Image (tube, rainbow, N blue to C red):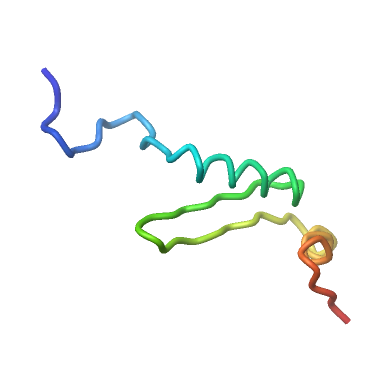
Length: 68
């Protein structure tokens, strides 16, 4: 049996838009760390992981944000 249309199948990840996945990959390459891009209907969130203060400063520097 198949689940009703529109309901997610448990255990399977949701289908990702190829454009969003490509952007996420490029961001991960740029920042050198795990990046998660969630996008839906023109809104979303961008999560960039860091593991310590030095890592955060490195990411900020790459983004062009200089901390005094």
